[in-house]
Image 1: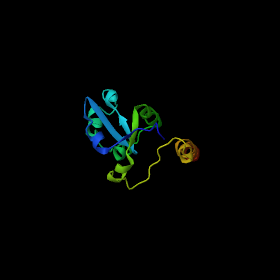
Image 2: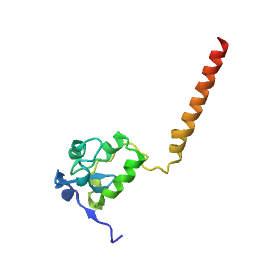
Image 3: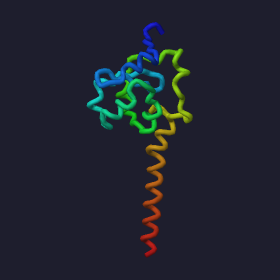
Image 4: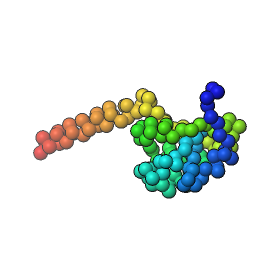
Length: 129
């Protein structure tokens, strides 16, 4: 636990410009300064969230597993435990990892079965004509 770096909300809020851009996602602090120009959604998207909690915005966008894995390299620490209550929690629970069992089902099996059923229905319909 001693190697964990904690940042207060006041410290994070000071990093809200293009020379130093920090954001909070799920209580982890990210220094995204060097990623500003590379961000697929544009620099402005990150700059709007700079110095504050970007959890809800990050989840609303629906970032891919690759994006979530890439974001790990920008983690510099965590929000200080004393400031956790100052961050407004989202009202919904989000699935944030690729290890979810439902992810595999919902991404591959269900669409595959649906496509098979549709193709069989089409073939049956065309055979009647």
